[in-house]
Picture (cartoon, rainbow, N blue to C red):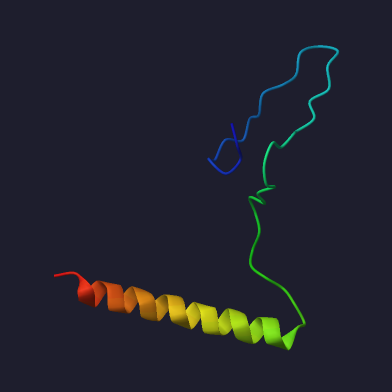
Length: 65
């Protein structure tokens, strides 16, 4: 059960137990809203990357026949 799937009621622990979330792999932030930074190089790289992805999608759509 996760909040990402829209579930608002998470399972309650048994009486006398404490419910502590644990992760076995990378931490996934369900509500991240982008990248905030003051680093100009990073911002430029992000803009370039977004443009490259859009161009790749355009070229891929032209290649499908």
